[in-house]
Image 1 (cartoon, rainbow, N blue to C red):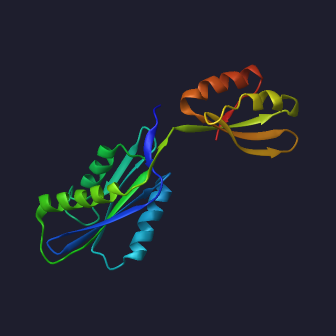
Image 2: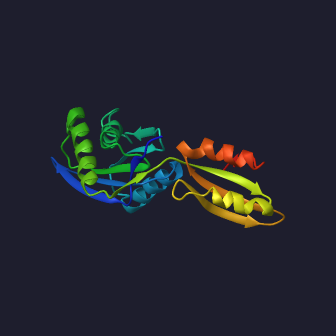
Length: 196
């Protein structure tokens, strides 16, 4: 699987449209719980807002979800999501907070305003390239530790965690495209990894 772009931090941008204020916040979200936490934080930070509309893309290939949060169907969440898609981002949560300014924008106006706010926040978003990674849990007899450690090839294959008891329990982080080769190499040593 190919590398993909993901946020390295948070970005905020505000636009105004016919009296309404749209504050877009884009930030990293490794999973759905992190996306929900970002949304909950903004709802708490801006309890007086009229709407908290959002979209997220997670993983590779990306899973996607969006919500209009009380706006007419298709006028908020989907336009925000389209901005994220267009930027090729994943592991990202975008929330656009709106304060109604007294003038209705219509469906087209709403969609354009939500997308414009998300695009504006995108301009200041720090981005990193991520490689899809799997985690393998292995139990290694001590006499085979040297052989297993020789399989490590940072950054493609890294030791993420280790615990010692009757044998060593290791968690290996491996780029997806190297996972099968690592499984085969471990099998040659008589070690059967499990997914973590």
